[in-house]
Image (cartoon, rainbow, N blue to C red; front, side, top):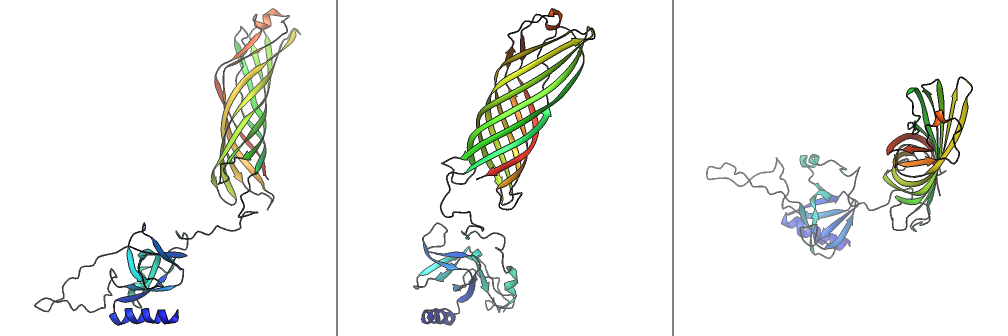
Amino acid sequence: MDTLKFLLLLIFSTSTLALEAQVIVLEAPLLSSPSLKSRVLQRVRKGKNLFIHKQGIVKSSWQMNYNVNSEGLPLEEKYQDVDFLKTLTRAGQDAWIPKKFVKIIYNDEREAALQMNPYSDYDPTDYRIEEPLEKGYPFVVQNKARATMTFGMGPASKSGFDYGSSILEENIGSRYSFVTTYSKKVSFDAYDRFYFGGILQIHGQRSVYFITNDRTSQETHGEIGIGPYITYDIYRTEDRSLTTYGAFTYNLHRYSVEQATRGDSFEERLFSGYSITPKFGLSYNIRNIIPESKVDLIFGSETNINLPYSLTTQSEGEISSFWNNSNQVDFPLSATYSFYVGIQASY
């Protein structure tokens, strides 16, 4: 090897057509032609020196120009910039290396044109995986799973019951929710971003209405739903991630309406029924809040698209003036949103 290097140095240096250059990327390719699409003949590691042809090299401002006109004045020399530099492989075969992957050793002021380590932040040839490596690497863990528990709060929806009288004042409470999910990584995802599973949600709200005829009403709306759930990590670092998700839930509703007057008249009726709710949301996750625990603290927002549904009751109203001859509560198409906080465990 030393003999070959000496011969290469002798050939280039005697012809005064060579310079020495140092590879500044992890692994630079030597190509069969000056094109990135050409065949790779050899790869050279960072820190190795190569002898390159002077073609396309900027001349030093101190270098003598012997090209003069008839009056002895120097002629302007044409300079053709190149993207590839000619060199030789270990076997002595002509090869080309991308000019941006080497630092030419001029031993003069031209070396200041290129900083010492331009690839300190990103090296396009560095194929190494960032450490720490995932447990079990290089084997891909297929049976990954996540479980979450969150508590949320947002504006509640207005009453759906028709009292048959004007509402003088209303005090609509907040809508509280408890949601838990369980999901597993899908088999076709090699990047550990898609998870599919199920969701269980519980919602509750309470509102008070003041109605004409010296009447008050309190509505309590409880809802429990279950359905499919899918998530995707759109952004992820070692300590942060951003996840979007979607779900459909099939819901059971329990809706209580209590009415009373100052004259001690009181009656309560219970309505029930089912609905379907599409939902989507976004969560910001602080990963491993306890080091190596695989427990994340999550914050997020969620939007529920409430499709039209109706609730009915089996009990007849005894005070007819309270119920407007209605045994049904109708809810139109609406949307609700909430903000939530919770934890997520991965295993």
